[in-house]
Image 1 (cartoon, rainbow, N blue to C red):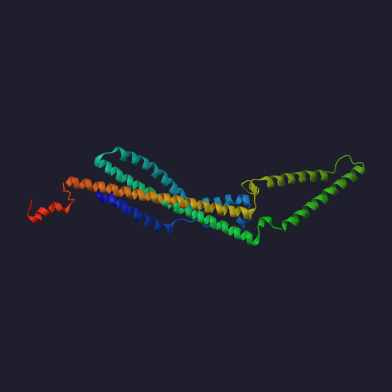
Image 2 (cartoon, rainbow, N blue to C red):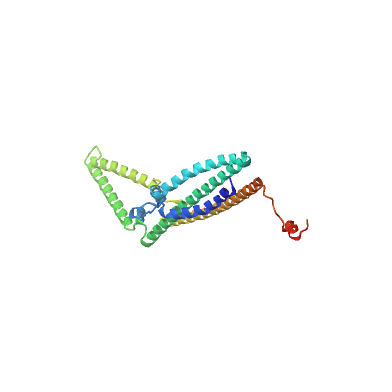
Length: 289
């Protein structure tokens, strides 16, 4: 192995950045829509619905494939590092060269993953911002003010009906009827079933109001919380990208060091003298030894 091969790693580091940038335009995307169905979902189910929509997207598939590649690449790094540390001489230089290439491939894959994750975060945040704007502008369809009067009228009608059934029963008993009205019994059975179903719906985890730090919040507050959460994820991704940049810098320095060692060994193998000071040649020009 010669120094030129090692220096090629540096060229690969620069070229891979360009290649990834060119490939980004062809990457799968995730385009969730602010549909009427999504707007009407209970706040507690909203985040889960958005997550499911993401899982069905091409962007999620790309992230999954990238993750599988990273698992294999990370496992290979450990093997190559052990081989490079155990080898000696020219074999060690070749092993170190292969280790550098593997680290460069890891950086490329992880950089690509960061790009995909940033797309997901930005798309998610934009979706929540649009949902929040819609709810703030026209209100939450799930909290339609016209539903409250209807619910009150329905409750009043049920109360009147229940009262009328009781009166019918009392009239029947006054006439000496020995049994409760069959219609009354059917009504009570149905009313109990409806009450049980309503209680189950109200208690269902997908229909309960979400909580933040133990406090129940509405859809507007919850959407603001999800937007802030996405911004936090973006900030953490910025930090991970900074770590990746320092890792790339170390790979570049390792490549330079390996190239320098390889060049020194090649010069030694060829037996070239090392001229360090121009004064060593003065005698040739002055005629003095």
